[in-house]
Image 1 (cartoon, rainbow, N blue to C red):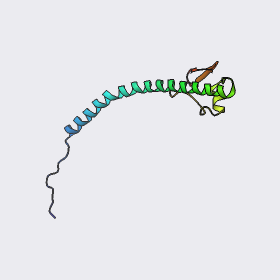
Image 2: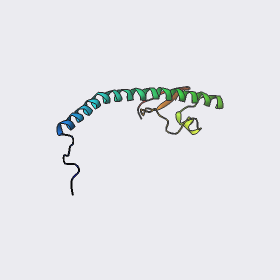
Image 3: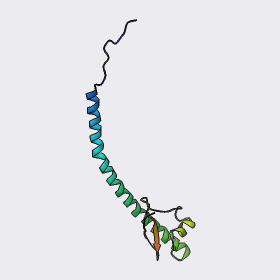
Image 4: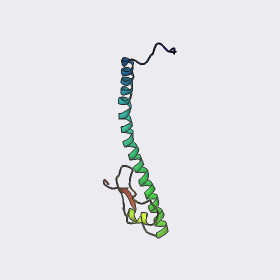
Length: 105
C-alpha cells in the first residue's frame, strides 16, 4: 500500500513557544484591567442596590404609614428578596428611613 503523504509537517517547538509567549503577554496585559473594573462594578452595583432599597423603604412607608426599622422587615413584607445585601457582601441598614451600607457580611 502506497502512502499518500510522504512528508509529515507540524509545528516546531520554537513556533509553539512563540505562540505561548504571545498568549502569556496578552493575559498579563488584560487581567489587571479586568480585576480593577470588577471592583468598580461591585461598588456601582452596591450604590444601585442602596437606591433601590431606599425606594422600597419609601413604598413601605406609603403602604404602612411608617418607615421600616430594618431590612428584615422589608424582606418579610415582600418588598425585597431574602438575604438582601450588596454584590460585594456588605449589608444594608436602615436608620430613621435612610438606607445606607453597613459593614462586611
